[in-house]
Length: 360
Image 1 (cartoon, rainbow, N blue to C red):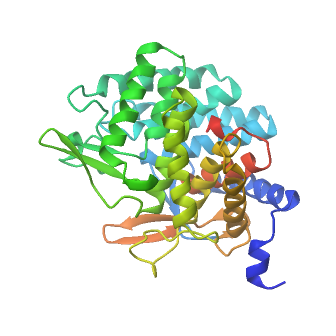
Image 2 (cartoon, rainbow, N blue to C red):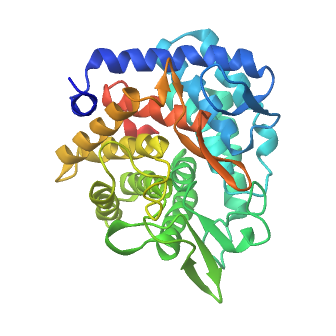
């Protein structure tokens, strides 16, 4: 079997389970390498980790990986590890960034949902309250904020990245006001970022009382995948018309991205691919497939993308070097991150039926 036909062959349960086991086992090696810090990125197997004292926006995914491991293995030690990492994120509660949603949904809310962790639930509730306080009525949205790269324009900007996490946090206790804020965030995300035919911009800017797209809709693969995840959660929580919008965004992905793996940005067809975006999109597609008219096409696309990842050179012994990440102001390269590994693990668990993709 040549390399192409091997990549296109249907996934087998045994190879998926092997990849899951390798991802879970690698957490111990990363933990030993990073000590009391948070893993930021690593350039490959046996390469040193860049460590962050506070975790930046990636810290929640490090806790999230341990929540997934605790869920899979039902081990008290894994749960304790996840709870300890989660509590170390608490000093980010008052950071001026909408990326708090990423930190506290994946780092805390997920532990409450999957394992009923009360300390994690309390932390996630605190994050939800802070996000509600950050909601700007003039923008009808939570702005990106100035921390973690938002800069001076952060107060007048909106990012699509935290949409799914924000909606999950606001829906935790099914409180009407929080659900209402989530719906407003979803509507403003449409005004700022929705393009034609299901393509989405990654961010928007509020200029003279109007939202404007900050980049070409659909160009950035991970931005489109973030939008798909957010729209999927919105469809689950609010129904029509968001269900149709989620399916349009998924349809755009199916039309615009190759099965083997999407390029990082469409306007750079010779540039790097972004397998992390493929893992994220696969998770979204699996969540939509059960109810969509073209659900079988979505499931097959997700399967093909996951097969390309775990059979390709970016995945070795649980080390997934598949996240296009800015390692310097003018340098973007594929590295291993907790974010990339989290979404690959979650998508593989969803494909194998071990977790409901709509929980993530």
